[in-house]
Length: 456
Ligand code: GLU
Image (cartoon, rainbow, N blue to C red; front, side, top):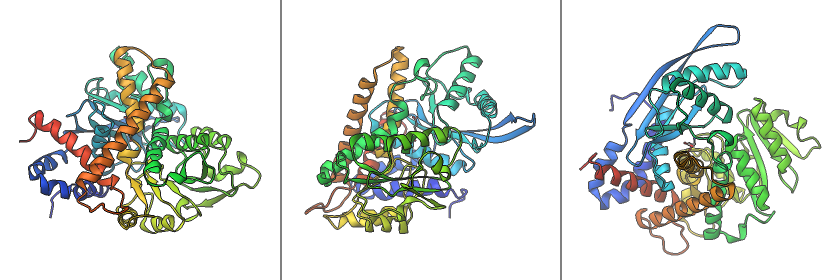
């Protein structure tokens, strides 16, 4: 028995990597040492955040930054502001981020941070005072060549602005210490869109290699999406722009399903974006989508509510697809599952999908978040490059680089899935993108660590 505290989310992420690495490690046992070492974060910073609420009272929260691995570049990863935040969640996210960032091909290590502060129901002034206090401590531990945080759940453009301002004033230094900044003050074009767009660019490769009949320019291709935040919104908008049909979105209180053939409209997705900025919930859908074309289901995720769906994109949070929901998706006709969220599927749900893939033709092809959603952090990497050059690239330039990164990431996962999954891929069995992403990400980080004398 380990004498370490139980960390369920981190252990889940670690078990997944460990399973994927088995065939590779049996051929290359020397890498077992790297696997032992890479599990432990280089450093964890934990601190107290005292902030003043609107009635003048002192409030206190926990602040964290997990600096997981810097073998490939400065620690890089978002800040999550959510009441569920604890070290298990931030360690799982930082661990995943390390391999995800490796798959972008850019020079970024892995990290993650945040606080159990709940931004829901807080005024802008309270959020600003929280961000000022949080950065007062975090600023001692980050830097443009050390650690570059960004957004995640609960941290969007407004929070990045407050955090950046707090750092700049404290240090008298305008530096690329955060990504996701505003376009006029050091941000990159396409960063807000990047995670969602990147998921779709990755999915386009999955479609081409498995079910070309599901082309995203056809309205008959139906896509179920969960979530209603940044990732879900821009994923949905890209699907709509290309011409396929979005059948669902959701938030922590329930799921919104389109009843019409046309699916969600661009206008409704944009209205959801505005609603979420104001802290609203989808339950008020009649205010922005009147006319009976949508159906709201309280306390439900979309997966058991959709029929005749070819593609499912979990884009809300971790463990948002259970075994039963995965089975419902298989029944609904889903052939492609790609995570916009980090660890969106439970281990049991992944087993359901992977078992169908191993049966050959007609199975589900599953792509883990560390591959499918790496477009967000990839454009953060491009924001860092632009900041170093003090230049701003055009939206077209950034979008075409993002497409290239997603293509490379897909090919790396596909090749490593063929080489390292230990599976017999004769017949129509598709390579495991799960094994591919995990092994390829691991080898890249492990090799850099070895070259830098961190294992031998
Ligand atoms: N939080 C995002 C992720 O999970 C983005 C991180 C970043 O841009 O640094 O990848």
